[in-house]
Amino acid sequence: MDQPFHASIRGGRIIDLTPAPVLMRSWRFAYRASPTAWTEYWKPMPRPGWHDLFALTKREEAVLEGDLHPFMAHLQYFKDVLALPRLQASAGAS
Amino acid sequence: MSGTIEPMIGRYVHVEIDGETHRIYFEESGAGIPLVCLHTAGADGRQWRHLLADKEFAKSFRIIAFDMPWHGKSNPPANWTGEEYRLTTARYTETIRTFCKALALKKPVVMGCSIGGRIVLNLAIEHASEFRALIGLEAADFQAPWYDTAWLNRPDVHGGEVCAALVSGLIAPQSPETFRRETLWCYKQGGPGVFKGDLYFYRVDGDLRGRVEGIDTGACPLYLLTGEYDFSCTPDDTKRTAAAIKGASVTIMEQLGHFPMSENPEQFRRYIAPVLNQILKQTTSEQQGVYV
Image (cartoon, rainbow over all chains, first blue to last red; front, side, top):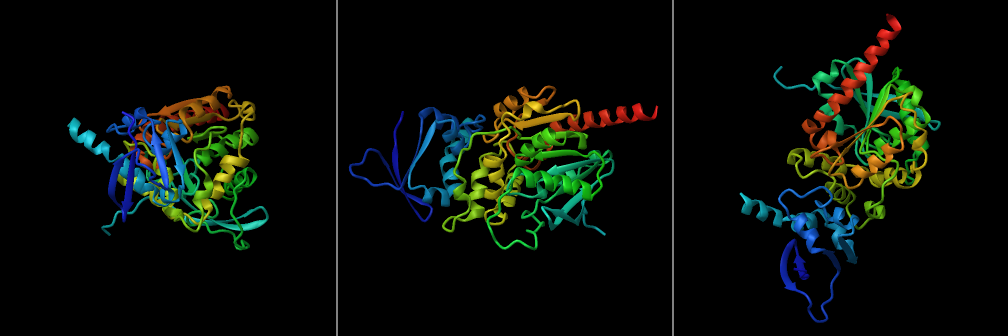
């Protein structure tokens, strides 16, 4: 299901994850991807073209919005955090 | 002596590029057909260390990898005053040809990856008769940009971190973690603005659309190999490019991304060995033709 979340991160820790919409909540940047994109991205061994956050934006299955500085300044962090469900998927598969 | 010493030897050669002396660092190993290897944008010749250490290839090839000026151990030229670095098609082409002449290489094979793959196409267009064969890895006449290069060099974002993080997605998920990290380390060590300056060639100056049709693979064979996980230069980009070049050989490499030689050397070897064998066979039959 297509369910956006607001995530608050301090010092590298996710301190809050709240399902959207939240009335009048401000945000710095958003990374939004289609449900298909997340399903593909979170496979233990994703297929070519579905394996990276920018692969998804390039194929127009995801969009970046807002002030991208925090995202770009901590890019590997965000790639790693958003890829974490892959570990769970592979643990579940084994 | 108990330490393991690798076979490649590193030296410096002084060459004149665009009227200025440049001190170029290169490593080589083996003997035979000269095989000059070109690194990707914002990286250096270390990407080729596994090929340079390959005992089998070294029996028939003199494998050479040099660092482009501003990269690795090749410093900017002495007259550089700090202005923004920008690689152009003309300068890149001149650098490669000058380097080959300085080492007196007779009809070398040139193999380049990414920007190195793009410039190989330009060598095929403009100087095919100087080369025995050309190999483009992750090569296309053009590919659609997927990020703004302004992020690569600005004071409020660490250049090494952002360069490495951007290209990390171009490595196949199957590639061994140790080689993934090593490939990215090279990007973390690049000089400020150098990756961005290389991409000026890639994105702006080196658009070869409409020019590759003129490549004569009869004068110089052309091999194009692209990793299936490369979403920057996609397999479709390479196939489209090859479709316009009569006689070009195309291989799509499974479980590889944008840095085949450094991200998964063993997997890359499976694909490059047949190409090198074919070049060797072609050379042997040509020599027999001359001497018989």
